[in-house]
Image 1 (cartoon, rainbow, N blue to C red):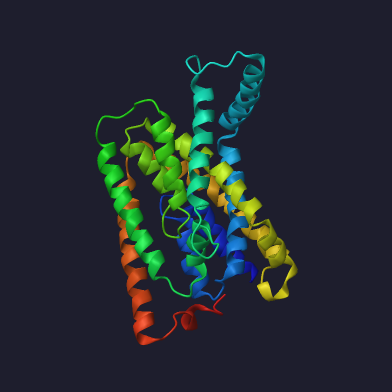
Image 2: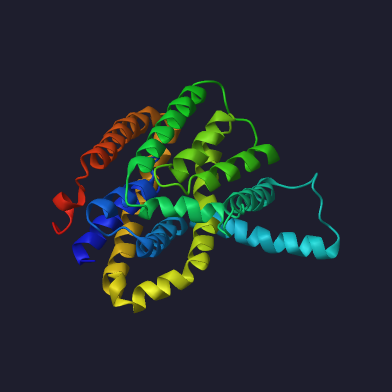
Length: 303
C-alpha cells in the first residue's frame, strides 16, 4: 500500500465515517477497485477508525469528560447504596443507555452461526469477498433509511430518550457493520424515526461510536499485528499512521457538517447520493460477474 492510497483512504474514512453514507462501504469499494481488498484490509480499516475516534474525542471532549466523571460518580453511588434509578440526571441516563446500546450491538455481532463463525465474521467478510454487489445493496438500504428518517424528522419531535430507544439504536449499530450501511446514518436515523431531540441524536450517535470502535480494535488486535509484521500483507507502519492522521483531521470537519445536516434535516441530500451510488455499484458488480471482466484491471496500480 502506497502513501497516496493511505491518504485517499484516510480522506474517505474521515469524511464518510460521520456523514451518513457508510465509511466501510466506500472503503470496501475503493480497496476492491485498487486491489487492496482482503483480510488485511479489515485490519487497516480498523486503524483508520481509530483516526476518526480521535476526531470524536476532539469535538465532543467536554461531553465525554462529563460522562467519564459521571461513571465514577455512578460507581460511588452503587457501592455506597445511594444509587437510584428514579433520581438519575441527564448524564447518568445517557451513560446507562450507552451501556445498553453497546451491549445490544455486541449481542448482534456475537450471534453464533453454523461452522463456528459469528455474525460479525460474515458481515466483515463481505469487504473481502471479491465482489461489490452486496455493498451496492447496502448503500440502497442506507438510502431508504435516510429517506424515511428525513420524512419522520419533519414531524414534531423532541421526546426524551428511553431504554427502548437505546435498544433499537444498539441493534441497528450492530447491523451497520455491513459495508454500505452507514453507522452514523443508521443510528441517527433510528433516533429521528423514534422522534428524539436532534441535538441528543447527534451527541448519542457519535459518542456511541467510541465503545464500538474500541471493541473492534481489541477484537482485531491480532490481525493488525500480523498486518504490520507480514510483508505479504502490504501494510506498512508509515502509510498506516498517515492514513490515521488524515482520517482524524477530515473527521473533525465531517462531524461539524453532519451536525448541521441533522439539525436542518437535510438528510435527503445523502439519501439521493446513496441511492445513485448503490445503483452504480450494484450495476457494476453484476456486469463484472456477467462479463467476467474484473474492474480492478482499470484501477489497480493507478496510485
